[in-house]
Image (cartoon, rainbow, N blue to C red; front, side, top):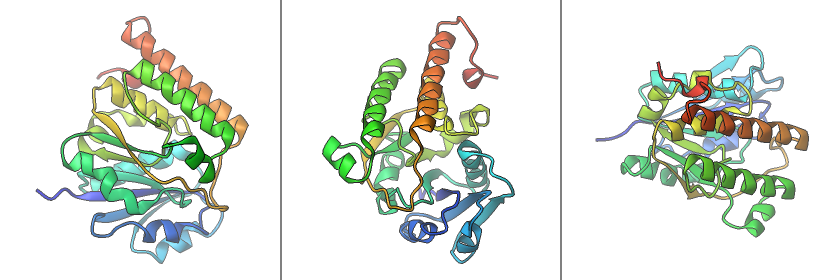
Length: 246
């Protein structure tokens, strides 16, 4: 059975990179591309309208997590069996989408992340900052220990999901900000989905977005908080709304 694959693109002030990001998507794999412009102040929407995509525009900036929520709702409405997330800032190598979705197509995984950290040397050469590399490695190891996973990298925004994941995980409860990715990962682990990763390239063009150390610290704190709440919920000591079953 042919599985319908929809690629969703979060876009915020990416007029300089969006076209390159979209044009690299293999159209023999992607049945549809959906771009969500999260209230950009530049010409992101104008660029998107020139491409063969469905464009959804937030009139105001709602946040990275909110943009993903819009992406996933739209993908499910369009009949997606597999949903792939990329960013419009051209950091993800969209040519690798066939390899990202292969474990889902084969029934090996439900949720696949792109692993950008095959080696320290390669990660830094690709533009990853040293502080971000060490923070990524440390947090990934903590998450693996707490969640019972064995991911090489837990913080990649390059992701693919089966339809079942998005239908069954209450992702609408997760943060509208940067914490969304890790809260979603906690949810996926808690609800028993099969999570894996595949190696992808590291690239960081000059125009690409990058979080500051202060934002990174807030992100790390939110990640650790989600893990603490997860442990308390699993021990039946405190209800965690993200994991509460209806």
